Length: 140
Image 1 (cartoon, rainbow, N blue to C red):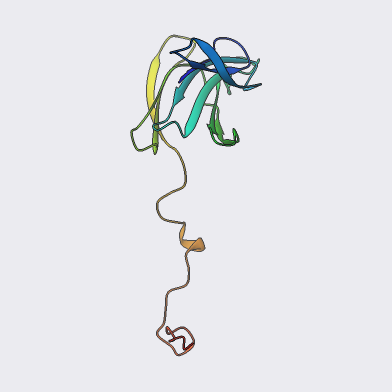
Image 2 (image 1 turned 30 degrees about the vertical axis):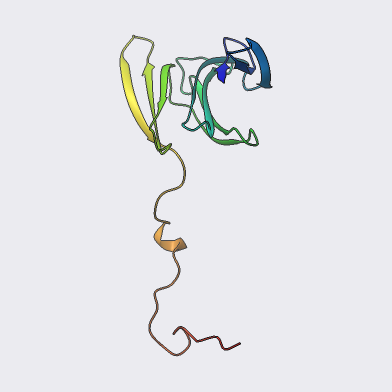
């Protein structure tokens, strides 16, 4: 399958063998400019013009959607124009190339998803070895 979006609000899913549109993700943004599919087609990231000042504080908006339910799981405004998007093979990283209004380019690598380890305040308490926290055998 081929995913395509060109300066419109929708992303179209095209079957290249039959040359037909087989699905669409409607109303992704006012104007989808770039997109990239994660391997193996689990997530779609788009860079879109949302109608604001592309050189301003926000610039183009990045959105990551799950393909299965089309829900946005992350959005980010990196500032400036986004020209290229690429996923790492394990779906954990996204590379993007941006340019500011003077034409200065920058390639950024962003972590996508949850951290491998939860923050310290969300981890379960350490076991003290007391009778209350010691593992117990369950007898049927």
